[in-house]
Amino acid sequence: MGVTAERGYDVLIGRDLAGELPGLIGAGTRRVLVVHQGAVAGSAERIRTALTGAGYEVHLSEVPDAEDAKTATVAARCWEQLGLAGFTRDDVVIGLGGGAATDLAGFVAATWLRGVRVIQVPTTLLGMVDAAVGGKTGINTAEGKNLVGAFHSPVGVLCDLDTLETLPAADLAAGLAEVVKCGFIDDPRILELVEADPDAARDPSAPVLRELVERAVATKARVVSADLREADLREILNYGHTFGHAIEHHEHFRWRHGEAVSVGLVFAAELAHLAGHLEAGVVDRHRRILTSLGLPTSYPAGSWDDLLTAMRRDKKTRGATLRFVILDGPASPTRLEGPSEDLLLAAYVAVSTEPALPVPQPEETARPATSTDDPPEFL
Ligand SMILES: NC(=O)c1ccc[n+]([C@@H]2O[C@H](COP(=O)([O-])OP(=O)(O)OC[C@H]3O[C@@H](n4cnc5c(N)ncnc54)[C@H](O)[C@@H]3O)[C@@H](O)[C@H]2O)c1
Ligand SMILES: O=C(O)C(=O)C[C@@H](O)[C@H](O)[C@H](O)COP(=O)(O)O
Ligand SMILES: [Zn+2]
Image (cartoon, rainbow, N blue to C red; front, side, top):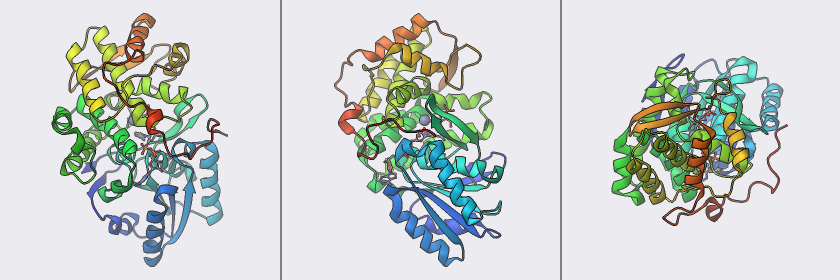
């Protein structure tokens, strides 16, 4: 699947793709830094062996798990490693892991010497269908999600579906939230496939998961090829993220991104309904589909004032005007500009009251204990 950005690149989706790496690195490169998560340390070692055998000088950088990697401190550690090893503009960074690792690796590559090549090797569903594709890179700050970053397209993306076999079920489900997002904004066939068999969608060996990956990547590739820098169309990929990012910030980045987006999708659907854009049945369809995948659809715990403050920092905000991606219907995205606070509060009430169906909340599927009880440090 091809993406046309400043220069085009391919997103390869398949199995046993490691052999493709040397071809993507190309001639003229001497050094490679693999930025990876601990969960895929074995894959990083295999890449090191293969690339060392092919004549490259390979450095590994294991970064903290999940959002703990997306900090200025961790980025600075990577820059130091690049500096000490003498990385030049001919050299290459590889991002290996989930979206947190590929966002950080992309940001490090975008900023080192004002830009060196990055190859993304996502090993989570969310990384494959979204984070590793499209060139948005970045880190968080104490004020909010992805507030520092750059657009920096990869030279290639390798989505090896075999890596999903070891992914915890809750992380696979989190990736499906972004897949469902693509279904609502662009490709309703995704919704039909999930509705037909939600359990198969959560099975990494089921053929339908491959089709879902291909369809979500096709949506993302089409959108970013048309609007890399988010002048307009690309905003649709942010469906569900204004409220989703506010939850992530409110929870000190301890919720999985996809889980927060899942609630954010329902919030955006409720908002669209309250603003007279979307039929109630489509709002219910959001809840039904996300619930069938084990994803949360409500957020009863928040402080509305804090959530509203976090939403105001959203990158789609223009001046003081909050802007939301909403739907007129499936595959019919539009924008809601400057909704009143009463309307926003009403949408919040709709997602903060108990849902009709019992849904697992993130604390029941908590991330493995990789972070401390303290919120992440940013400097
Ligand atoms: N740049 C973009 O366009 C974009 C798009 C969507 C999301 N994102 C970002 O992506 C991040 C979320 O990505 P994510 O959901 O992949 O989370 P993540 O990177 O935190 O990975 C989830 C968990 O899976 C583990 N893991 C990774 N690969 C594994 C494997 N093969 N087997 C077992 N465990 C594995 C990780 O160590 C981590 O604990 C967020 O920071 C979000 O903001 C960016
Ligand atoms: O690629 C995009 O554009 C997206 O908005 C995809 C989102 O799923 C992703 O989470 C992205 O990182 C959010 O970007 P941000 O600009 O809101 O930080
Ligand atoms: Zn996202």
